[in-house]
Image 1 (cartoon, rainbow, N blue to C red):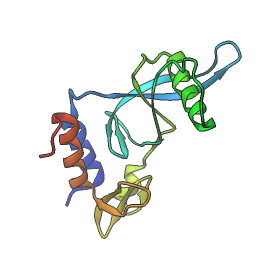
Image 2: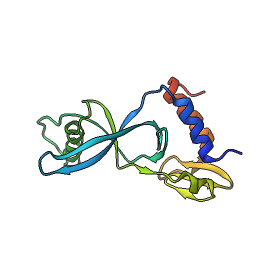
Image 3: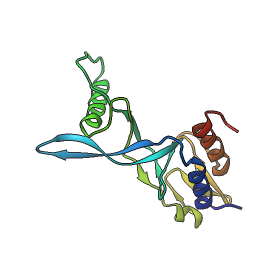
Length: 156
């Protein structure tokens, strides 16, 4: 039986050369204002973000863009436009996908029988909760499908 760390390491090897998306962190400065700056890149694999060294849980996903001058019917739309502009001010290119608010998953804790973020050991099987309302599914099957989609555009 594979451990979560072994399954994730295999996924990273299979993703070599596949496109990555930006990892950002919000920064506030008196001189430069609020912006989202690049702190790395990762493969977006469903609810997971994989880097060469870490597994992260996704949170906010946005696309860097100029908010322009628009009328907003909802305050949430105005706030989302401002977040996109913060990424643009932070150095992301217009249209680039940015992940913000992600958190590091403790894969060793999962391998030891616990849980971290969307990963858990369920009945001895490394598993992932693929949505907040969904149940757990085996991590191996989840990664096989998601990696194939990212790498080739079609599941195996």
